[in-house]
Image (cartoon, rainbow, N blue to C red; front, top):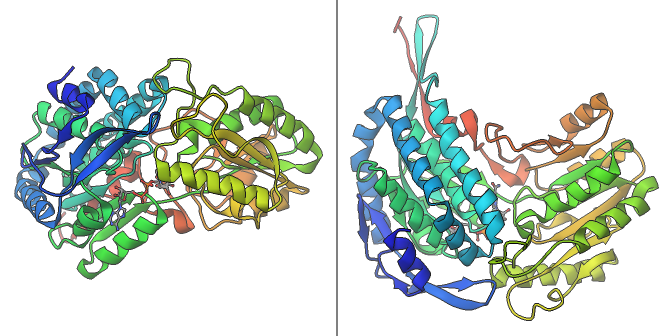
Length: 484
Ligand code: NAD
């Protein structure tokens, strides 16, 4: 266990909340509470930064850029490898920090939040083995160069994973970065900065400034010394970032909200598809942007889907995230808890049929931001619960009569992030997958693929993360004519 970890878990005030130019630095802004969502108790405090801290971090990143960009790809790969090894070696520390800052069940933090985060580091490293940074088209050389200093803003739902999804490809590309994690989940980000430090990454290549979106995030988005800003978060924050970034014409990539459909075709194997669909919707307590929260089901099978769905939801162990057998811990914070309670009330008021769950905490849990796994049936696509991202364990079952209608329902949303199709007929599942207007579509719950580009159509964002496409976002394209 690192000293930093012991300090974080001790729960005192953390003033050294910035890592700039290879050193830990104190921040002078307001102290922000870190609330443990399982207990509602303050689990520590973290100092926040301001625009002057962002200036310092951007200056450090600018100074480090030329040398880092000029490194051979193999050396950047070696750094990524060392960072990954340290993250995996410190899995337990990261898992404990994540569980405390956003409530993930400890088993889930250990087996999903941390190892999946490490996968982005592995993929970025592997891509460097033969990434085509230069290619020829006739006598013109097409060169792909790092875009420069990248500001990265991340949310609290998958705190480490969202960080590595941006930092790994940025470093692989040869960019230098300034990271602002969510002010609600700063602990794992501090541990990540320590891992970067211990991996020996040159000073200034990676910088971290903690603080709020309106102060630190806004300063990063508008900063003239930043070449690109990448945000994962709510649509509200994504819009504000794009607006702040516009005058400096920097590249903006946005990974925003979702309301992803899960189309069960008439020949789907319901005994498999329904439990898997419910668990996918409730994974991470429903706090995943691509969670398939709208189950679109053939009306003829509605009763069977309802029975299997309720059975699955009612069997989920909700409780203390420190317990090994807990599947779902609490929601990550009070705002999220209140939002979920409000939306369950909206669903009832709109006349959707409550199959299981509902308002309030699960029985026996009087404290903590715990919600009841909730399924509504006979949801109409016009209802707010079918349109608004809830970001909690609330699933909408929407019946359809024809496959064309199912596709129309799937696409009847402002979002376009994830999508699922279940069915036995291979041709039909493929055809429906192609008709869904989202950045990813999963057929019959395949294994997670860290190489598959991830990102949104429509209001779910701009740009792609993960794998080769994720790396490409951090590159400029230069044509050198008359090269060959
Ligand atoms: P949020 O928008 O409140 O915060 C996200 C980040 O943006 C935080 O670091 C926050 O400080 C920062 N921020 C807020 N206002 C800002 C501003 N004006 N300028 C700059 N930065 C600002 O979102 P959240 O509640 O942390 O996360 C939940 C949201 O994130 C959901 O909508 C979810 O769908 C979305 N999300 C999307 C993806 C994806 O890949 N598409 C992944 C995870 C989460």
